[in-house]
Image 1 (cartoon, helix red, strand yellow):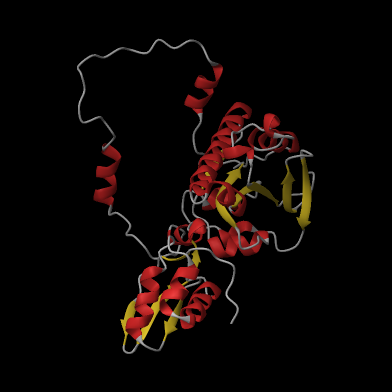
Image 2 (cartoon, one colour):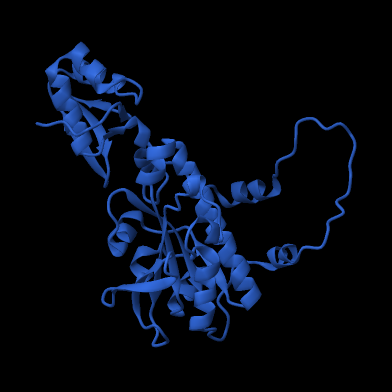
Length: 316
C-alpha cells in the first residue's frame, strides 16, 4: 500500500482495546478495527503525535508501521500535523457526540456570568465616545424572529448584503479583513422564489461581484439545517439563505493549524457585516450555527478540504 504524502502523522482519536483488537473512531460515525499485536499497534498510535516525522516512525518500528500509517490516513483517522483542523473541526461539528448540553438551570446560571479581571486597581473612567454612525447601527442589530406577515427580500437588498459581506476585487476592495489576504471563504446563496435572479443554488464570485448558478434542482436548504423553533419559521418563509464555507487548505499551508483560527475570525466578520447591512436596510436576519456538516458539504458539492461553517437566513 502506497503511503499518502504526509510529514508528521497525527492521531487525535482515543483508541480502545476490544478483545484482541484496537478500535479507533473514524469520520462519518465509523470505527476502524486494527488487528495484530495490540501493544505494537498502540505504540505506533502513540508516536503519531503530529510532531514525529513518518520516516522516523518507520525507521524505529519497521515497514509494517508504514502500512499502518497508510491505513490510518486512508480512513481519515490520521492527518498531517499541519492539518489537525481536519480532526478538531469534525470534533466540534454537530453530531460528533462530544460534550453535553446544559440543563435549563445551568444555562440560566451561565447567562448571569461574565468576565471580569481578577484584580482591579480601583480607578474607573467613563467612556466619552466620538460620534460614529456604525456604533448606533451595531447597537440596533438583532437576530430576527418570524413575524405575522411575510417580509420578502428584494434583489437590490440581497445584492447589498453580498456586497457588504464578501464581494469585491482584490484585498483592498473586500469589506472584511482576512489573514494574509487569502480570503478562503466561499459564499453560496439559496433562492427559492420567482424573484430575480431566480430559484436555485448560487455561488458568489467575489472578484466579478456576481452570482453564478450552480444548479436549479435539489436546492431546498431545509434538509441541511438542524430543526429549531426559533429558526424553522424563518427558513420556511422562503427567503434567501446564505451559506458560508471555508477552503481550509490554503490558510493551513501558510499558517498551519492557526489558519483555522483566522478562518473563524473572518467568518465572524462576514456575519457581523451581514447583520449591519440588514439592520440598515430593515431586512430581518438570523445566523444559524445548527447545520448538518456532512449534508451541507454534499449539498454545496464541496471538496474534502472545504468545510461549511454557518448559515444566514434573510427575510421573514
